[in-house]
Length: 472
Picture: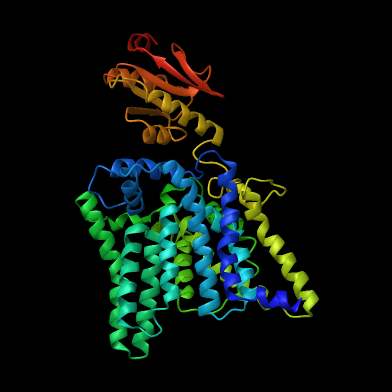
């Protein structure tokens, strides 16, 4: 038994588990779906295809994918592999930070790994916020490097490189790294370390400069900062009480499994403290100043996940009592904490959880993209059929957002979309704009006047001639 404990306590084993456990768990919904999961995933594919022939820089993650697309990489296959790797790398770096920078024991580090792996919030971010996932990996690498400690020239240069890419990748991570470096600058100023203060001020400004330059190169104009804020009271259909109820409800539904532990495990950290403060301030602005609040405040709340997982893990490590009591208590707490994430994997859903009330924000199952996996798989197959069409004057009509992004990525024909149940108006518009043949991808029996060329399950490919379309 002692021999096994010695082996298990090895840092190499802990680091290996911190990568393999989240990799295996995050791979489950991908293996259960024949197509890449995540609502935004198909949007990345279309952006990458469009950027492959343009000099634009933003969105930077899609630009990277566009380079791979230019070399003939099948992005549909790639996006089945990358998200689990991103998720595993995120948890791995978090474990490295806990073990090497916070000095946590191997047991506490493993608790953190399990909590992060099965966190509904963490899994939700990995589901389709892929550019945020990449930026978060860079941010955690920046934290692990610990720029405050022993600020050498090599570390300064590396810091600037990491932060430059964060500035090009995702706005929320950009805000987080600005808050962290501004906080470090204030710490340096308080200690009268003026050179260090100047470096951190420059590090705080760098992501903003990179983002503005990228926006100017891409859109020939600087980014508009006014788009960050909104008047929620003017847009909210209910009253202020309803707004507060919704915001508090979505906070509890997202983090119910760790909220009781966070106050017990909170600790000061020069990186996590400004991180969670900035994101919490953005989220609370929707309650405290709804007339001037950040847009997408729920995303700000969601991005508190990583610091909150650290606090919850720290709370469990502080449990007092006998070894048996602590073991039983930790295992019981982990079971409760892991229920939400386990339920989202798509294997089985034994519990009705609070997050099910906000499925538009946190999906009840990750085995989903823009539509049911079997329907998306059918659309992909029918798109390949369309690619054999020789008439370059043809066009395609299909549903947006269920099917249109997949069709746009897989075909080069003009795509017209509709959002209701009837493709008729979109077909008429396509014909009026000069389409020679109209191909419709929609459910069987839901299109009149069309010839079925092929069908996959419930989805069919119709061909409608312009003359028949005009008679409808």
